[in-house]
Image 1: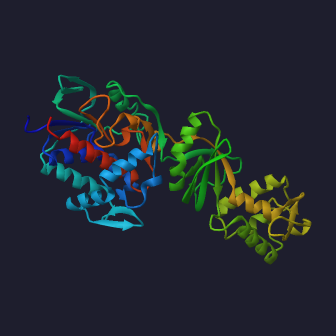
Image 2: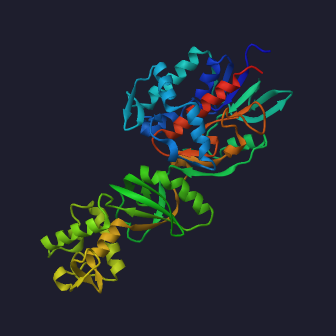
Image 3: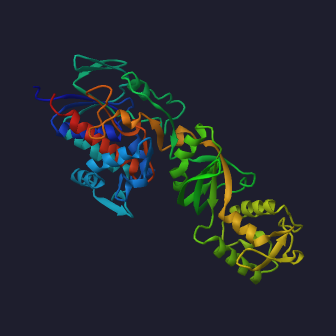
Length: 436
């Protein structure tokens, strides 16, 4: 029996570096092969450079993929609490912001530096500018080929990430090709945690607006998912954490040929009836204001234009004032379904009811995304059914392990993707280090 396993780790990202530390701590001789000039490039971008590196919340609905139970099982074996303890031991003092865990420095560089220091302490070799071109296995010995050299190992950990955040110049990403040669299949990768391109004729002036909202995802008018928080409205569509939360599902549904839309609620604090009552009160207090002016103080100015124009189109009515709406005094009153109140009618429609409905349900059609370059993660990859949830070892090739983004698991914002990287890296590193 060998004293030490020789472990080659392909990829110097979050899961690769953590796997290297774990394998070395368990007695393996470890070499990390990284194709970039420096290891950990993506870590520096996480959390807008602040690196919320784990989350102490409930992970039950924080992951997507063919089998979300895989993620929950992996996290049960190496928990967020284990992660916090590990990084604390490596010198990171943590701060907790509603379950989102950051280094107290609030810089991703602190997290990467602590990882690199620990690798140096363990005498792990990190070889950069090494682009792996192939993996071969004969007589239980792996040979990993690069453009300039080849390395032999007893175990190999494939931690080469995904196409997330890669520019057109950095594509194509070849990590999936490496693993497919080992007999694995691959679910077509798509951007996730990415801004969405959407279409609505009245969104053309809302670029630059930031506002609290909830976004609901629909496929062929069937409700799929919902998320809330601050969103950003852009010239091309919608962005922000709530949009990121549904983006992967939206693009996967579109790939399946379905019509996908998002319903934005720009006033989630109030129910439909409560918002209707508020608008009715404002109308009674300011009977001479245009509908657009009625929303001043409730919504950002550039959003008011989109909402009021959309409401006018729904009513089939445009007024003759300088604001593009008819004055209230010109509109007859009628009974409405809005708590039985009297409201103004726009060509037979209830002004207040339609306005409230538009604010609470502004529909946009999803046409695509900003692409891999703007994606924080990727959906798709190697199906988790082809990997052991206990060890992250391939079921297709003994001695080969798969970690992090290359697997068909993508987490939501808040440190979930990094926690999956730490957990899979830990399991793979620990078991790869075991004696043959």
